[in-house]
Image 1 (tube, helix red, strand yellow):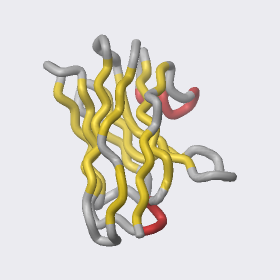
Image 2: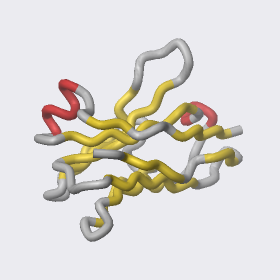
Image 3: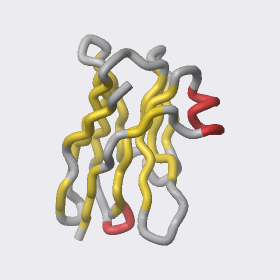
Image 4: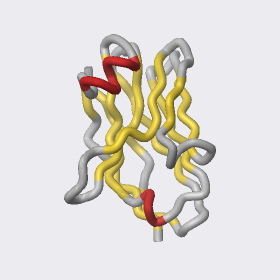
Length: 118
């Protein structure tokens, strides 16, 4: 399975960005993780194909994850961004469940995309 990310970039605080992640084949669950230099990766938003979603506390209320099954593509709409959201965002996908995705990490990874908020 290949994951191709797009979106990201630079935005001022309070602005919005949308990330997308296209999978080459259907997967059970997808989501985004982010990482800043020197820190462990953080879970941001995850969902399975049944529509169950999970957000980190920092993403709750500001970010929305969605999925287009016809395109095998997930989206992360990020609103009201702040400098603490600056990171490399990685799309991850799992073969089984959200529980496994959270516990064991993704089975497949995108190339990562930089998000910078100033």
